[in-house]
Amino acid sequence: MADSRDVIIGIDAGTSVIKAVAFDLRGRQVASASVRNAYHTGADGSATQSMSQTWADCAAALRGLGEKVARLADRTAALSLTGQGDGTWLVGADNAPVGDAWLWLDARAAPTVSRLAAGAGNRARFEATGTGLNTCQQGSQMAHMQDHHPELLNRAEVAMHCKDWLFLNLTGIRATDPSEASFTFGNFRTREYDDTVLEALGLTGQRHLLPPILDGSRETRPLTRAAAEATGLLEGTPVSLGYVDMVMTALGAGVHTGDTGTACSTIGSTGVHMRSVRAGDVHLNPDGTGYVICLPVPDRVTQVQTNMAATLNLDWALALAGDLLAEMGEAPSHADLVDRIDGWMARSSPGALLYHPYISEAGERGPFVNATARAGLNGLTSQHRYADIIRAVIEGLGMATRHCYEAMGPMPSELRLTGGAARSDAVRRVLAASLDTPVRVSQREEAGAAGCAMMAAVAIGAYPDMDACIADWTTPLLGEADQPDPALVPVYDSLFESYRAACGALTPVWEDLATHRARKGTEQ
Image (cartoon, rainbow, N blue to C red):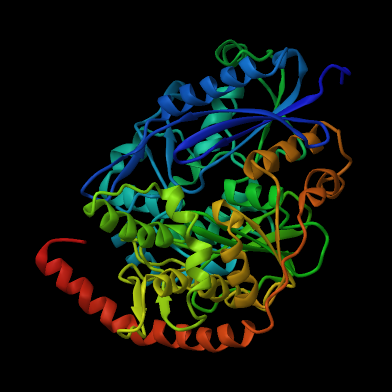
């Protein structure tokens, strides 16, 4: 490798933004560029994205990065990519899209999921994949297509995910990675496809659509001439196919640094909670929920539980204040309201109210799956004020995080935190006390792009293995640990018992409300 090749590019193709980030070979971020993309939703529950536009946006992001980094093409040692998980990106003849991609947000497969979940083979499928069945997944969506849109599968030659599609456009190679292959159609222990899973999904006849599995931490493929012309990079540049975005973000933020019992939570619009364990030590949830996702480290996987909504709950609560002030002629920005959170927390009492953060219209998916689950506030009296509601919402995020980790085994010995809410002192304090564990924030700005760039760094030999790369790229960026407040821990222990009990007690109420909404013909 020439000395001038001192940059690795990580591409993170999210649901709303595609980012291209340049790092030096020791993990320091050099520059970034991004392009917003778009998806379309329909009244039938569809959520789709143009595949050709997604590739065009990816190429545009790379060109934009080239405008910020001098001699980027000559300096790029490798590029790697990750992207939004789940969903179905069908490719047909001449590597052309069959149609728009079905995203992880697409809900059309809900009736198919209900049927498959009740099937005799579903537990065996869960034991192999470690992943609960839901509408997000490619397996569920393909099973639904087979029953209701067979023309799509008939025209397809390969079923891909977002990052796989971009890798195809960059290299001309049809492939997927071990993480999405195993949690969708395979076995996390072997990192290969599993016939038991395909049979449980009723997709044995569609096995020909599954692409070869390629581990981007071990091998790369060269950038094609056409992709070089589209992106401004050099033909032949090594391209690494990263793992799914959830695990790449966690890798970049510190889910695995060799410290026993650590975990990583991303508190963004949704909540993603992950712990790194040996494959043989996985604690499978008896309720059949969550994910098990392979790490690009031998015999290491992440156990994952995800909340459908995290900071979306806080956005809702802040919008209440914003709407009321707007009625009175004021127009505070979201940032103005966020700046007031610490003051509201100081004027409220811990554990006074109980909030379940199921604000999403899709209900909840972790650590239980219930599409009818809805947010609720319990314990109100005439003495409570807006500050108490804000505290209850933030405490609800702490309770939901604890609920997820409880489903995966013991509480973490330390929680590494990333996502927008990680910057909030209030959120960190509540999470530390809710889990009774220290909370450490990663200073990594673009953890997803960094995670996949780390895979490329190992693949091209810049590091002998992933652990050595983590020691340079991840561990030094972990901040000081926030210790749990000993006065808050018993308060939140008690609150959590009520939180968990109320989930079970409220289930029939949620179902009755769903019936009521259906009669009215609305989901408001």
